[in-house]
Length: 412
Ligand SMILES: Cc1cc2nc3c(=O)[nH]c(=O)nc-3n(C[C@H](O)[C@H](O)[C@H](O)COP(=O)(O)OP(=O)(O)OC[C@H]3O[C@@H](n4cnc5c(N)ncnc54)[C@H](O)[C@@H]3O)c2cc1C
Image 1 (cartoon, helix red, strand yellow):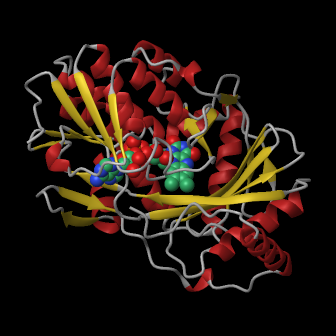
Image 2 (image 1 turned 90 degrees about the vertical axis):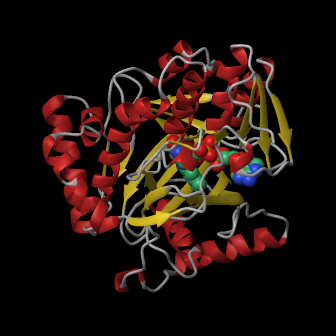
């Protein structure tokens, strides 16, 4: 039996961001920490894709928070943005902007400059022992940081070379991204176009092909595909965050953003809080309930409302966002407002739980209210455009000559 939370050793399942954040804080306080990771390296779940770390769920800048926790944001490359191209469902492009940092883009994967390798370096420098290629069960560990288990939604993307300048575009479009959004991120000559499917589809590749065709029509991309990437998101609210003495952090603990899938900040924050709780500095269950759960619930309520609308609803959201920016002079104010658990939003929680989430009893006895992967709708069935077919064929020929696809839905 490995578990020894009362002694010096701490055992952590998963060397993703949540596990490594927890491990680093604990090792800095002289705990002996072992992290077990089934993959060959941290970040291997991803493959060079860009992800955004949001800066709107608290008043404090997230990088200042990291510094306060003793985590060094200079260990990985990040690019700050105060502006985004907001693409409305009718193809109008507007620009929400703020004076400060709205979000930062980081790269995921196993290259030196990725956030995953940055967190791995911090952990190792603090004395953490990471055991790669080792599968453990939750029962053998004190902190469960094993990431998503089920699929509530998936995202597919293509990474490409481009001559376009740095840019982040965010598109609300129920056809190209059923129930969700697509995005394009370009950093230093490398682009990622990604579509998120919040409704399960057969032949999901056609959504990515059509989305890429859309961006090619609307931006001068000069696109040269490199590889395709993707993954799943698991959205669920458990009834407990500490169960049987084990701490559930990151996506394994249901700490994910139901609205847009911005899980990195929750992963790191929950890892830090679990470590501090083990060190006797706080009570993890209470901290999560006070600090993170209200945000998760607000995001779930927003998702519940979004699930009821198609493009007409998305258009209302995009227009409201821009009106709000004109009124307040700050495009970030709308995003902050979306996560405020006001009286009206809180009143919608019981309805959200009944209408959108399903009660699951997990093997270890924990109860989780999960968002199932929703069924496709009639309107999701449409004819592919000629341009999208060309994009698809181009990808097939690149794949034949070695282009990699890092994702299958049956992963993990
Ligand atoms: C395509 C895609 C795009 C995304 N974009 C964004 C974004 O723009 N912004 C954002 O904030 N978030 C984004 N997310 C979500 C974000 O990546 C995750 O929420 C976050 O990485 C979760 O971190 P974690 O530490 O909880 O889990 P993970 O990063 O999944 O780490 C868990 C680790 O545990 C390991 N593991 C699992 N089971 C075992 C076992 N039995 N034994 C040993 N090891 C095990 C896994 O191999 C994995 O490495 C995206 C996710 C996807 C899939």
